[in-house]
Image 1 (cartoon, helix red, strand yellow):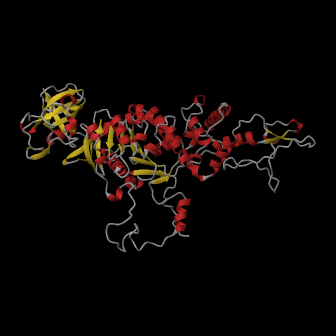
Image 2 (cartoon, one colour):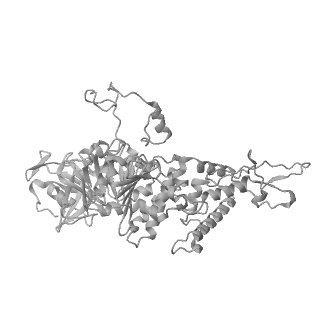
Image 3 (cartoon, helix red, strand yellow):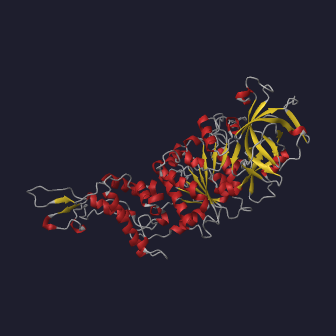
Length: 633
């Protein structure tokens, strides 16, 4: 790695001041031009973000140019201005060795009058590596300004050390993620790749559909790779379940304790009826992912809270035979239907002294009437079917299910395609945060306990891609999604679980989560607050590079961190146009002249199809942009 060119065209200046990893350099006075030629190739001197090297013995120290000109003159030299304004400030980032090895960090520092050299294309190729030499490297594009140099990233460190893709709207962020996932899911190189995408807006089915199974609220039955999204409630921990079903419970804790005991008892009874090999009922808790009937629990609690009973004759108020049900026209009792979520109807309290028929409420209520009414409504409406009526995972009143938890995990991370997309666009926004947290917690727990098995993350790591992360990984540290993600980014590396955080507002992401990301794909960021959060999360002193973020082109990223030898400004290789995420800007005005054969769209096309707002409203009511029944009417 140490260059044999110690002088001549490669020398551009000398070290004058060293402060930690910041080095002040004066440019040589004989450099009348800012352009230098090495082996017939021209190099601009003093470009912000460009690299330089400082030979120190048998080691080359590498740094990035962060300031040039008057702003780079050290304070103690501003009065005398030696060398005029021909100064540069360099941030040291790593060192290279004669063996060809490059490492981040500095073991020694330069001193006065050490020569500063241009980093040539040959040096960059040695640092960044070659695809045909190292199997763990993957190509994601090319270095900006040097198309001959591949932009290679270390897949080992990208996945297990976590990463973040950040960029403002329109910077090409979603396309970059699609390009990365296309590379990482290449079945030729990585036949056992395992990637799960949390897709909040349904953008990635188009881009990755040929190599992914897609789970969504309203799947297209005509597409074999689309399936119904099911997240069974009984796979959640007790606290998670309470949040998405009952909501806030009375602060005295009585209701919570009774519900916890009933859930645990229901799971134990279900396990006794449908035994699971190796699972002892004595080990079952309210957090155990054992199927049980939430509908029956709700129905029983509803009777306890709303039920009235005939008190004459000393009847036992706990005996359903004594309950005062209303009756329909056929004199049948309106006892409700637990499995359908239909509540029973009880007669009103009647305790008039002269009336021999006395009707009272059941004693000792839990004071959770609003919560039970809200849960009953959720059991009856289809918006929550993905959770409360999860297809083959929905228990009957005895707790029996058609498919088990192993079937669910196998669908998500053990299917025959490298990518699984959980399309969460149809989930009610009020529970999105909780559902994401529940999914992440289930995956973490599963891979944690299976860490020594062939299906575990140590032998076959899992990459979890979290789109629009700022909407659920904000500074609310108590949210389910934030808690689960913090656990993954802090401890997931040991168990083969990696996270890729994707966001247009990194300043809104919890700082603990962002700081654990070892690699950044920083795209155009115009907001100063967002840029400062990215800079603060980096382990290197790279203000010179991050100051370039506002002027990056669409599809261009600065890749920094552990997955690359040196930070590099990169043009990410985008997928073909017909395989990009469904996140492109709508066309307002076509740049080419209108043509009758063109697909209708934009404001300048005259022959637009006759509007059909009946179908328009149908897609809205079905909560499905492409409903399977396109008949008009």
